[in-house]
Length: 511
Ligand SMILES: Cc1cc2nc3c(=O)[nH]c(=O)nc-3n(C[C@H](O)[C@H](O)[C@H](O)COP(=O)(O)OP(=O)(O)OC[C@H]3O[C@@H](n4cnc5c(N)ncnc54)[C@H](O)[C@@H]3O)c2cc1C
Image (cartoon, rainbow, N blue to C red):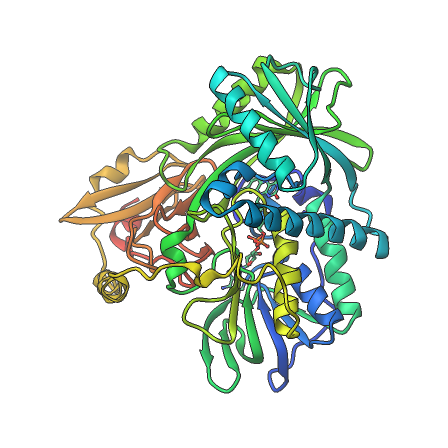
């Protein structure tokens, strides 16, 4: 089983063994492109660039698919979460069509890879059904159907849907697909290494200096590249993009049904947040995957309750034999609904791909294709469409950075007395919370062995206060989505640093 950035096991984690790179990195080599991040974006980008003649190095902070690719539900859509009617309104009809063209190319590229490399990842082409349950949703569906057709994606209204949920109107779209994302990424990683690419795991990128080339500082030393691509889901460090991309948490479960009535297509209701449904077969076993209950990261007090709400939704409509897996994961939404793919604002040789919302399966390949074209000096109609520099600068940006550096310094080296922390006595094993005394806040968690882990709750990225996630046993930052294990070690960015540990020597001695 592979690791992921949460304590719950997703359906995919069990389906592969750890990836063991065979290639070896070299500190003295000037790579053409260094790619930070070994999820679906990083590995697809690496393979396409290596095949285009660029010498590539992938640096992954943990192990391949440790991030959201290991916690996705892997619907491969051209029917996007942000409907074409909204894209049309925010941009134009022409741009909505360009978006559709780009995701169609991405889906075709995924299919091509699976054929070319003979990848065993249970890939299936299918349809998607979007269904309305209220009159308001019905009106919305009419607009979505029209805009989807205008964008060049055929659709039709249907009288029946494949799950036992009542609906008023439903729209069916061809040209969608599903697969096991982790098996797909592992196979691409293998092909990347066969093509001469290099992968290093357990290697976190912590900084980069742009000079003539890019010098990349990592937890394992310095590497050099002509270009750096942040395929880290959100770029590390502090950048304008962190003001724009909103981290969101979504919940999923993989269910065994009592009867063999697994739907073959992908389905979505139209609530906000919406529920999403599909079936995946893994090694001959069918699982019905249901997701939903999304919220802004760390804006829900009780994440276990979100899983319970999802479970009660599932049990209301389906005959459940067993809930085999349940998990949650994080994604990033951009304010205008389109991803940011291209040069990182303020940088010349550093590129980024982020803000996919819930459509990272197609958008990761859109990114890989576009970034490869950019770095091989090929033109692309999507360059301006997804340009991260379409952002307007934020006025308070520089004061924001200096303020936050101060906040982080305040906590360094402090030792708190256990006696004063009477609130600890109320902490149950497995519980985490923020306690306050002497005008200071402390993030504490009592593990299953009764050991208390005490941390500064100040996120080292931008100084926001982290919140406990009781479903994944992590500290999550509500501002920009940095996440930490209960012992403070960083799980995912934008921060590259751990939460500061606070010594509870006195308390531990007393116990
Ligand atoms: C519950 C859920 C369901 C979803 N379902 C769908 C779906 O059905 N269809 C769809 O299209 N999309 C879906 N999405 C979105 C999709 O899963 C993501 O957009 C996609 O997986 C992102 O892939 P990525 O490679 O960009 O990021 P990740 O998979 O997060 O990979 C980033 C990698 O970078 C590494 N990393 C981070 N920081 C550093 C650093 N400083 N140095 C080196 N490495 C670093 C991480 O360890 C990680 O492995 C879903 C998301 C969620 C949360």
